[in-house]
Length: 367
Image 1 (cartoon, rainbow, N blue to C red):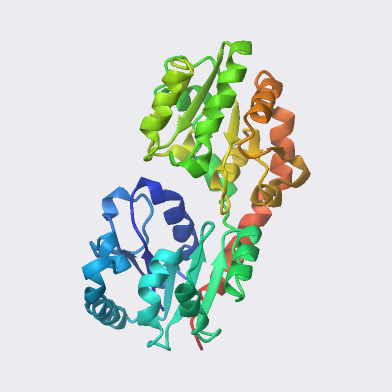
Image 2: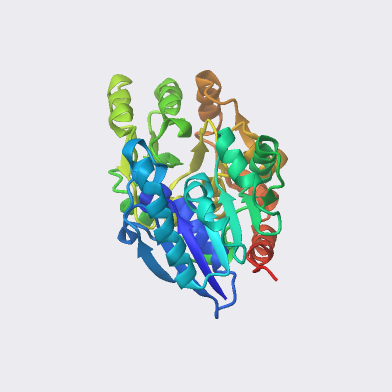
């Protein structure tokens, strides 16, 4: 069997999406021929790519057909159609709305190919985009979401079935690769490896909530002079967050070390992990922290409750006072009992096995 895995773009901002797709296709029979296409960006910037890799080198304007590039779309579609035909693909795996918006107009005229679209986060569809999904026969097109919460939201928006493919990690492999506390802290370039550290991980964008996390930390910090906050990640909000750190007089207390290679190996450098997201499709950071044995404080989002249930500690989204109180409450506590409870609630071994089974079923070719 041949499969084409189409990614919207490469690079660190998309690393969690790449990781999920890599895990999905890794469940296929080893004899499966896999080709990964990056519509934008360069493969060298992506840590996870499966099989033969092709970089298309398109720009966002080309892919979205904006302005004069709308005239170019028939040519772009013709190139993709020929490449798909030449690939011999029986299954095409698409990365969410961006990749499907480009490839579905091509694939609707290739009925022998099974199409799977995996959504990783909240998505807003135009009527034209909804019609694009609705015109496919249900036996040819399958849509899946990385959490039950996201699947229900997409189902209501599209009026079509959406399967749950809850993203998961192999806990045995993940644990094997973790660095211990002091080494992890050195790799994050932290000046003081003995402090208590609250860690946050994610792209530096508004949806991650790091802006109000800084405000909450500034309120709590005077009562915990040895506590440090480390936000690992990179993104367009870096300058804004750096300005806020200065404004709140948090220099030396908050660190932005940027995106770190091998980030998933560093969680044991934290005493607690905080996830102040305003919205999430699933949030692999939660799973990574829990499997690493680090207790988690998270925004009160349904997608987090889906994973941790009553073992979670949830704080209202963007409520600075509530987050400051939570940091006060847990900053100096040992989180051992909480991390154990959260691990049992997440049940990573069972979830991983279910993910493997569902991935194989999802990518079965048309008969």
